[in-house]
Amino acid sequence: HIRHFNSAFWMGDYTKANKCSEAILALPRVLKIQLVFHTFYTGLIAFEMHRDGGGKEQLAKGKDVLDKMKIWSKCSTSNFDNKLLLLEAECHASMCDIKAAKVAFEA
Image (cartoon, rainbow, N blue to C red; front, side):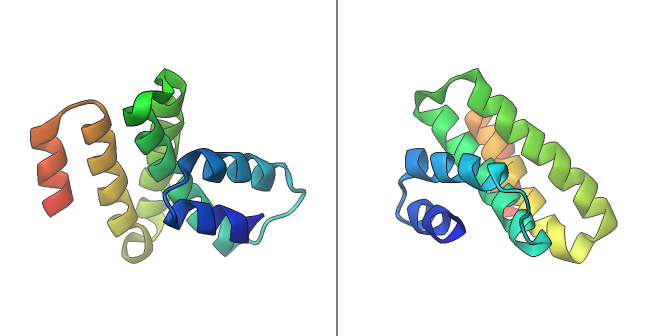
C-alpha cells in the first residue's frame, strides 16, 4: 500500500493517494518512520484536495496533520521544522491567505 501511496502522490493522483492512505491506516501495524512520512504527505494531499474542491473535511484533515506536526516539531526540530513550514504554507494557501502562504513558502 505504501508503494502505491508514494507512486500516486508523486504522479499527482491525489484521489488515489488518499484512498491508499486510508488503506494504510487500516493496517494493524505500520513502521514508525513510514508513519511519519505518510502523515506528512497525507497533510499535503488534504490541502491540495481542499483547493481542488474537496470540501471542508479535507481542510480539517490537513489541519489535524498540521497540529500533529507542530507537536512533533517541538520534540525534534531538526527532523520536523521543514515539514511544519511547508504544511503551514499549504494551509495558508488553502485558506486563500496568499501573503501568509508566500512568507511561509519562502521561510
